[in-house]
Image (cartoon, rainbow, N blue to C red; front, side, top):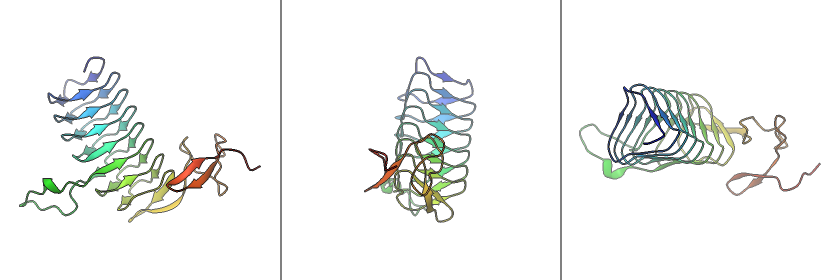
Amino acid sequence: MAGAFVHETAIIDSGTVVGTGTKIWHFSRVLSGCRIGERCNIGQNVVIRPDVTIGNNCKIQNNVSVFKGVTLEDGVFCGPSMVFTNIYNPRAEISKMDQVRPTLAKKGATIGANATVVCGTTLGRYSFFGAGAVVTRNVSDHALVLGNPAKQIGWMCICGERLSDDLECLTCGKAYDKGLEGLLPRRSSSK
């Protein structure tokens, strides 16, 4: 963990890899076998369960638990108190850890405060989930989803702004075309 900052109240188990420039704040807990990339910010009271992989430049806000089976690619944002699940139909009296369903948050995904991500889903690159959304199925690259259950209502730019109906960003000027898994950067302007 050389080059990382770990607050004195945080507990990091042995067998954990923490990248340079990463900060782990008050009362957080990282269990063995986790891999946390470089330049991440792990907020207060975060729990990262065994065998989780977190890419570079991720931000996990306060009170988030990242359970076994979850993978966050580079640049994923997890809002305060959002929830990942890992067992689809848990029971307190029956161990079902052999039924973990993997969840993948692809590069640049943003998950809003108090959102819930049901296990077994894939969150597309640069997708954006509004606060309180309940994600029950896979979401396309750049999709903007809201509600319970979460439904797509639009598209988002890499810069985090909503795209116009023409799939152009009025803030940064990027433009997109529809592809098989969501949006792709436009190769040439149609205007």
